[in-house]
Image 1 (tube, one colour):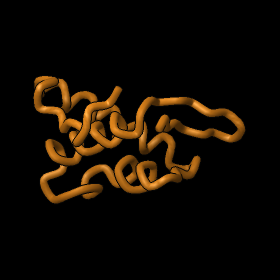
Image 2 (cartoon, one colour):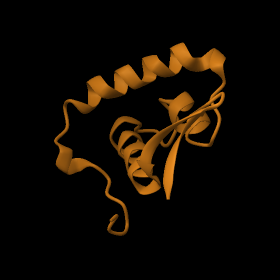
Image 3 (cartoon, rainbow, N blue to C red):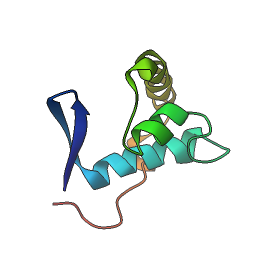
Image 4 (cartoon, rainbow, N blue to C red):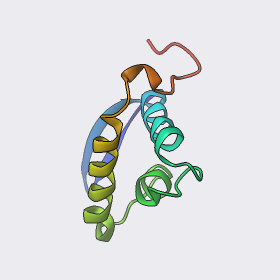
Length: 87
């Protein structure tokens, strides 16, 4: 099933739900030693669970920038893969 982000009346598709979950799982596993959402609560708790209020946009962008920079230190082979093959 495709997932995406809805902003007001606009829909921005991201891709398959397994892809998105794999991304969030990779971030949490490698960058949050104290568990899911402990370092990046806006992205991994609020957005992942379905709603991020507009007032948090600047802060979640900071989280994403930090994640992007941190993931540069990892090979793509360390990503958390979906449990089944995505076609």
